[in-house]
Length: 293
Image (cartoon, rainbow, N blue to C red; front, side):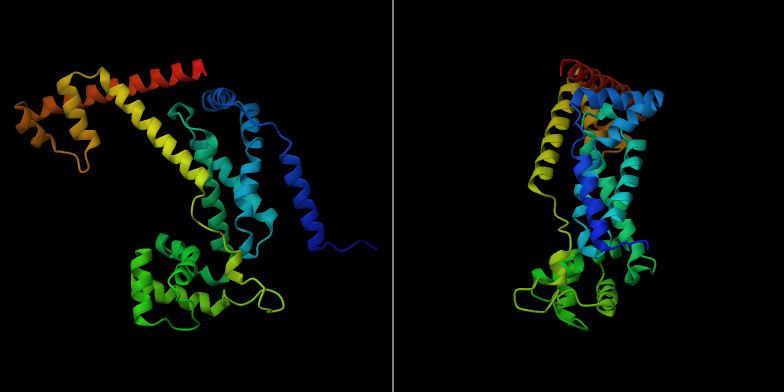
């Protein structure tokens, strides 16, 4: 008689999978850059196979953070792998940051979309704000000590709407949908005082310190790279580029024309030339950096 497939069997398969992908060697920055260029410029299948396979452990790590939604880890990993492939379609190695930093957001987005499609309480069409609510509402309630069953008081609704930057009506609707499924503060297991609550199994959407450090480092590098590239501009090009490309909101051609005393068309030409010079300088600096790594 064929043995029935159990959750224990599935866990053993998942454990074996994670153990296998951890044995795959990591790529250096130079190796990753060269492989990404081969895939982008030549469509080299071996290049993308190496890039994806060496990032499977990243997919597994991200997927593991979403196990609290009651879905099989294997399914979460599979969706994360789809996100990894989508990231490869858009990744540009010339931008100067590592593939893992870029792919992280595609992997998370793919897994979150899968969770939203799977959970019965969100099968109604959702907006971006409602998707954020699905992953954030209970956590926000807990933070302001507003975790209660049934309808929320007007004061709590107003506080949550302000905290999550969404309309109050969407708070009310999502709370009703969450309450209609099951309470997230129900004890898991026997209900003893030491038992965890369902909310304890939900993923923490905040970036960990390592990711925050990566982002700060990337922003600092990009800022330094831009400042270096802008040194190739003359005084007028620097002024136009800064006012048209770096200000928020940018000055209009008419405003710059009046300030400098030249025609709008001349301002447009200077902006275009300055942008081309900066872009070319950035590519040159990035290429030299990779050659020296």
